[in-house]
Length: 311
Image (cartoon, rainbow, N blue to C red; front, top):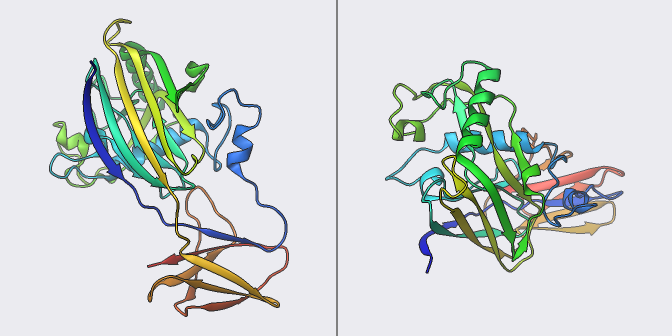
């Protein structure tokens, strides 16, 4: 019988409702699955929401560094789902426990893309001691790559029982990126690093990852891991089993067309309606349309509009 450790996570995300007055919006989920040996997995050489795998890997670590350790709870330590502000939710698998299959239960709303290490990747920064230390981009990337080569091999992954083929093509190094300012009780401090609070630093990461386009509304099982560990192909299986429940979302917004206008309304007695004409991986600019519920908006021909309610 397998040794199993169980962890639970639930992530709620704000839903966006797009109004396309003219034309068809580009759907990254559809584009990512074209000519793909692994349906539902973004190919390693393609971008998703404007970012490469290496750039999403950087976003994974930047989001992880923003989260303080509270009573021993942190995605790096207790696994599960985090992030989401850039349009993709991150899943954090087990990084150790050789020979143990860690079961992680996650609930996410429909329409959620997922980015996850196959076996926990590694990050190296200017704030850490060797072997996780580097002073510039070259030394940071080398430290991360060397660690992965020594401590992880023979990757595997299954999505609802279907194996991911050519998995080593997803073993990618990140570009250099910046982390911080680090919060109090950051996870480097948890592991004994000194004088890190409020600091920023350059970093780089490496490892094998998967980026999944949104899953159907139902229960799913995603298994990720490796059989090689600590430089030894027989060093011990490190495996995480994600039980993922994708829940249907009750729309918070509704749009009704009325002549040359649209009427936007939402659930709840409070909130500010916001709009943008362009969704970006980061730094999307939202314009406030006020708190009137419902709100009448004049249609501008040929322009896509996206709405959300900030409550």
